[in-house]
Length: 446
Image 1 (tube, rainbow, N blue to C red):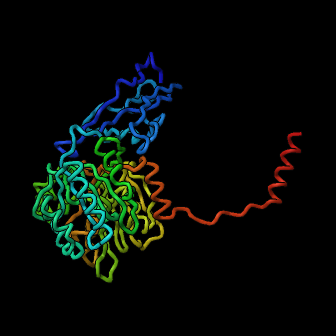
Image 2 (cartoon, rainbow, N blue to C red):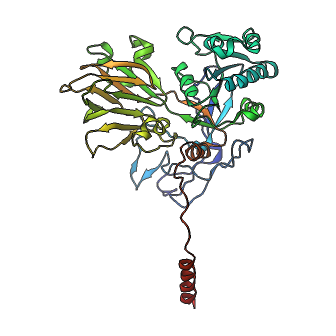
Image 3 (cartoon, rainbow, N blue to C red):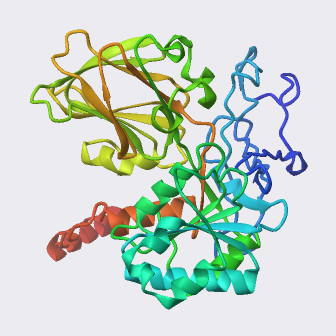
């Protein structure tokens, strides 16, 4: 880039920008400090800043993970159209960290049901937060109705000191400042389902079977929770999918783009308009016939799926059902939507990745012999008939997941520990071959 004649300029450290995401209308914002290195003219101007606590992070990266500059130029004349309404700015994930506008006052604790080990951790955590942190604790009423809790005197005592809610009756919007999950990956999915707009930061402790999405260990919970409440924490913004089920001839089916469909316009909000954390699955259900599904991307019919079904997943969901069906594992920071067929009746039908924000529409083909079924994160299973459509795009409200280390370390550690990614016995060396190579190199140098 010609810094003088072409009017390009390098941004200084003082020109870092701040993006306020309304994850909670009362409390939270995220600082997206620019940390780009302009390498187009050989420069290396970097806004390097160290985090406040080395336990949760390390020195900021010296250049962005993304190679394209927001204000880049193409040759002497070309630039990106400067239209904030249509442009998507991708922040450097190394600069995402939690910032509290004011001290958090309320915390929602999600506990794994029917688990005595999680019950012990739950009672210890609730008691400590109430007594030491003076925070208001919200817990689902079903937790105290659970068999492992009904006969526990500690639970009965704590129930008098906390606020309870019921999933389908009470709205937690603008009531919760912070979320803590005690359990497996399912507790995080459930927490996501409770917040269908902005979601507070969530900290997940691993007490489940796999723990791919729960990076924290409970043995030193006091120190870890304190660090997060003080703002010493990195964040991973896990994107969600906006899924709207449009019935035949309904008024919302005539709206041009799914982004324009508001939640209030959906007839049955809890069933037909959802934010999905992992994936939307369309399958043939109990029918013996192949599902016959028309797949549209941005209004274009791209293919007809003949097989057991189709998975539309977030990058986070790419390591769930999608990876079992043959999809690639996509890091949660990648802005994308993964489309994966389930047992397609075609050897050439491979999973594809499309840009985040694209509209995906799924309809039952006119030639189909049967209807199909759709499920959202394994819940709200519904039958889809000819004329109905399932419309999907990237939601504007992510799940702000607190990192134990950082976005990269947490993800690759989960791949290694939970999925045993690329684990095999190492190949044995051949001493004779190594000595022969060493002899050849010595003779070449002489």
